[in-house]
Amino acid sequence: MPLEISGTLLLVGVGNMGGALLKGWLDQGLDSRCIIVQDPNPPQPIAQLLAANGLCALAAEQVAERLTEKPAVIVIAVKPQLMDAVFPAVARLAGPETVVLSVAAGKTVASFEKHLARRAPVVRSIPNTPASVGRGITAAFANADVTPQQKAQCDKLLCAVGAVGWVDDESLIDAATAVSGSGPAYVFLLAECLAEAGVKAGLPPELADKLARWTVAGAGELLHRSDLPPAQLRTNVTSPNGATHAALQVLMATPGLQDLMTEAVAAATRRSAELAG
Image (cartoon, rainbow, N blue to C red; front, side, top):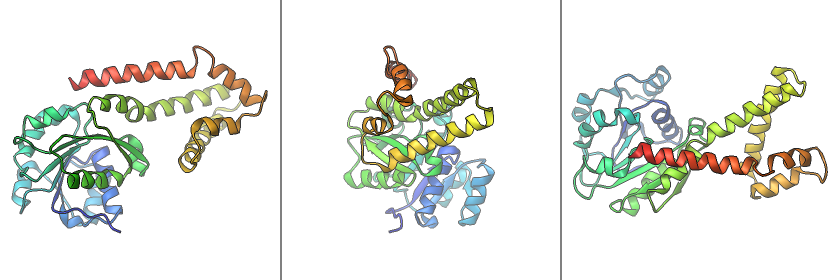
């Protein structure tokens, strides 16, 4: 079944995340005629994607002229530091049935509600960078004014670039940001450290990098495809008193990887809350 929405979709910003969403929607068959894109300077690859689908990126003043009805969904994908300059004008385009879906980090539901009519439906979401290859995970929160139909529509739009998990308490978005939003950086650091450890063990740098990349990517794919919990997959790799067991004795010591990860996620959670105000 192709992706469908009921009404017009206004996408504001087609940088990394907005562009990934747009590509995901088009790949899943969303009719380009229902999409309006607002961006003063889209990246060249996105400009080509737009042209190939009969779309163009409009300046803010052109959007109102193009709209023939109030959007069903307004997706806000601009950088957080641009939000205060961009969103007030966009908010005036929202109708009483418009749901605002934000993918901007660090902006609370309240920061959107203050620009919108009373009881406006708003969804705050945090996708992560693997969305660019269709393997993202998004944490999302809907305010009390989002209808079940609007929530389902936002879920479909976000699922175009991966999986979605909903939280009932907006404060949990900060913890989700620390785990999944920032999480790819932790995995990339693991690949860096694994490659560097390989070099120190005597491997040529190019081979160490290749081994680390493929190991991290392959283990991630195995985790994705398997129904087994991570702990069981780890156990399956670990022979008693073997090489893997010797390494895990180090990584699982106290303090070990779990302690460091707990501390790192706590730090990221605190900082996410601070940035959101």
